[in-house]
Image (cartoon, rainbow, N blue to C red; front, side, top):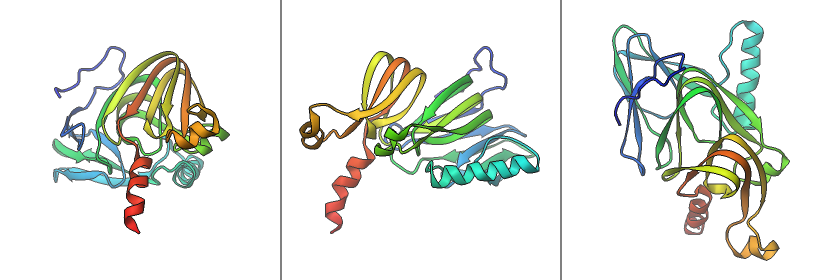
Length: 245
């Protein structure tokens, strides 16, 4: 992938990066000039140059001050134990000279890039990989119905200006939606735009829900973009469980 150009209206320049080995076993390399930083999910670093330092920090919005730190700690705890997100994230910074950091998700799948220019992108649990710039990560309550789905009660809401990389299990396909759209809950990576979301059955009543193998689905309505993943982690677990005795 060639270096990304800076879109009009962006406040900060996009970081040079390259995504390789996708869509099955993708790895992200971010090239940092002196003073540049990238924030990544804990445990996803593959390698880094010696010139790139690493610092662990709370997974909470950018802020300062004593009470802001307490709030950040509270939000980080909520994300960890309720939202399913990592308690700590790693900040990689090129100090005196340029360097690179290599990142890869835990599951075999792809890495997608999204340049944020003030929009909001909602991600399912575990889809976030890394970001750079003035980007904030917040919790979004998905409603009581979402407790029944794979995504759980909370989503990760990404907003601000900068670079965002997110991941999937399998390949990622972006679908532009205008109206009604149904996604199996195990195949949802994220969504953006003016889209409403409810959780329901795939159809066919109780028999259809049990016998079809589809279970619960995410029902969207409105206009926006939905990101799908080609594989389902729940199906993988279901396939492996009988083999584990």
